[in-house]
Length: 261
Image (tube, rainbow, N blue to C red; front, top):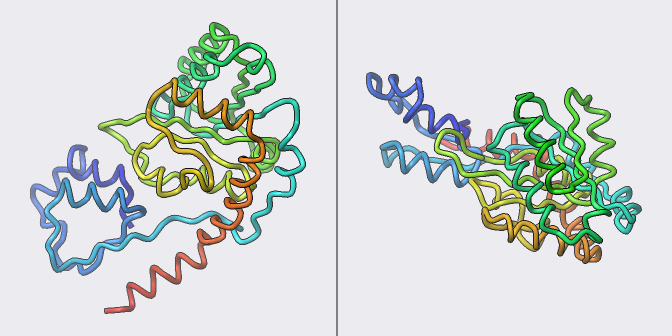
């Protein structure tokens, strides 16, 4: 199974030496990629022999078949609008752009929004995000070292999951498991159209996908804040959609392709 950043590493990273001295595809009959986007960049950066099948098999999430949105529906109209984001604390994840987008909202809206970031990483970047939040009068809490049980609680409290990933030449969003984790709790997502994210977050179905533009991101947040009925629709779709990403189903698909010679 090839992931997006692995494809880049084989072309530009330390592992690129192997592609120069070895035939990577010698004896290979099938290649599995974790998204159509990863398949696309594999074909773009590597000369894959035409007799090799490239098959997309998505990643899965644990217990996706038990997805529920009863807690989400209970909290959807709460006065405090909870936005959650999960990911490593680095610039590529776009936490700063979310803060800037929130900062563009009118104060009478902004005062009802709480933005929680869960992730480990650079203390320097964490400090930058806190300073940026203060400058934009945005209520931000950054949590690190969060347990799985606590993270599940935070998903349960969320009205919207937001990850405004940025394009990068060094790493790519080859899939986006966090969006499925949110969907498992019935939480719709707002995401940027980067990498394979639009394959996971279905625009106007399980959430919203926007360009890498802070103004557009801000408008989308405002739309979700003011149209809770839209979030209910997205939430119901999330529960139905994420059931397709159980590891059991995906394993069956993968191994049926492997055995189908």
